[in-house]
Image (cartoon, rainbow, N blue to C red):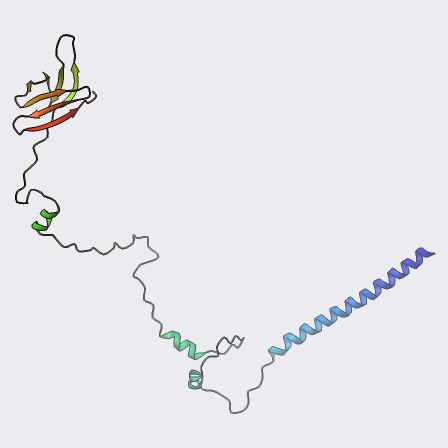
Length: 199
């Protein structure tokens, strides 16, 4: 018997909750109809309150006023007519490189100013450097009982010389080392160390 009593209690609670839900549902639909109906009814304008375009133009816009009023704001339209677009001249629809930076004009220095910075052939008192020695050292011969000799080449010609000997009637071999040789240009009194080159 208790089983039937529990079912009756549950049935009664379910009916009460269903009625409460139906009441709240009807109330929600009625409230939403009242909210949507209220703004759609326009207020009639009082007699004699028709405004001209000049009066609308003089009237300043209300700050941050947001409304759903569909009337045309002529003052805002007239203010936007005076805006003129001033572009940079770049066509955004064409791929083209950026314009080069403007060229800076560099003041040309006088000969005296250049000679103060570095001495060059136009300067007074300029002494040209001696021409380089274009011999290549590519090997040496060292036999027991004989003095050391070097192999030098210039423009396809091969010369063999020892210390103190002259090559090509111009270059004197001063010292022969393991990895280099000291050569003196007799005509210009210029000494240069020539390193050993492979091949």
